[in-house]
Image (cartoon, rainbow, N blue to C red; front, top):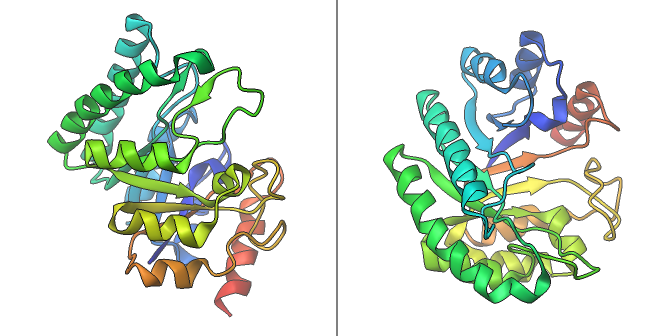
Length: 255
């Protein structure tokens, strides 16, 4: 297993010295947060520090599942541009959201669209030698719309259909209400990365491990059981914690 850090966690004002501190703390890689306005500068910093690189593709104002052809074309173009950029920096994986249906009633027809689009996106990712990782999302509890994929069965079906991999966000999974050990067992070799944070089981708080319901308890053993060797990505709330808070936590864990 490798220890990575989501660059959402460092905020918008990261410096080269911050990346040196990330490297010194024993992180193997970073996951670019594409919507940060200095994300491409962060790519340069990561390369200078010889950190492995992945990306969380943008999702604000984009929707892979949309029935609007103009929105989909824009989404695919933005995703493709980032895949190309990631490949230029030797990136390994691209985590992405499956989008959302405009209403819960159109879930089934939306999934038909998404399956077709996953194949199209994966074809482009393969051209650049990048693994696509579909992330599990939190369901809309008011049932106004349907987030894809916000239940484990749907998530597994899409991953298997498109022959892509999964990014397991354990904070999302806790709010979904699913058991982590059982879910990891079902994912097996399809698991490509893990997003690590803590919460209270009700909201996606992105706390440091141990400051919520201790969601990561047993995680290492569960991952070891499936011979997982990929990135475990700390995805910590930058509005609650500083980079130094994260580094202090890592220092305690490594003692």
